[in-house]
Image (cartoon, rainbow, N blue to C red; front, side, top):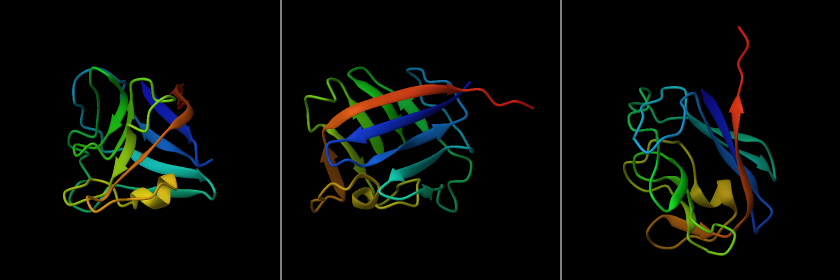
Length: 130
């Protein structure tokens, strides 16, 4: 079913992603996927035009938690609260309309990537009543 991943990083930003699919070790398409930021202010980050089908929108790999986007645009690494290895990437070919620095508050580098330590994160199952 659908899940909501909420991330609280060391910079006191709260952000994450939604998918209508269940997480597994395989890449999944999801036309309903989006990223969001809650703190410091609410903002939604939808898919780019041309990416509306959500091709390879989510997956999980060994040593990682949730991964959003085929270009690894938002990801959680193993031991996320002990490492700066978590991050966002908003370079060429990304699926989401977002700025990695804006969603996470982290400083970037020349490769359009930002890294940060996570204080806590949770992935919740979302029950949608019809």
